[in-house]
Each structure stands twice: as C-alpha cells, then as structure tokens.
Length: 85
Image: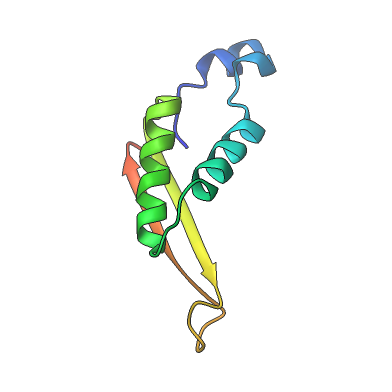
C-alpha cells in the first residue's frame, strides 16, 4: 500500500504508521460480511475499501484462491492501482 509515511519515517514513531493488524482485521471483517462468488469481486471491493479508508496513493494486492482449479495449486488476481513508486 502506498501512503504518506513521511511523518513516521521522520519521527521513528509507531503512532504515525499504518496499523497493519487493523488493516488485516478490516479486510477479514469485510470479506466475512457478505457472500462472494468471484475472487475478482473480492479483490476490487477490498481495494476500494482500503483506498477510501486509508487514503492510499496506490495499492498492489495479490489475492489467491487455493484449490479453485483441479489442475493448479491456486489461482488468483493481482490488482494494481494508483501511483506506486
């Protein structure tokens, strides 16, 4: 996730970082809140949620679905949005 981490870097203070435990819980809560048929829908909706909630400048997210296809260990999608430097 691309976000303005300048203050965290300058102060070395965890108070200015993203709370990754919170981000993980937000994703889990959202995905468990409603049924999804397609991994693509999950990826796009979670990307929208993260961008709006955390004011992200960019996002790269890989989402996998193990054992979705018999011939593959897993399948997945990669979502890339915004400015990733």
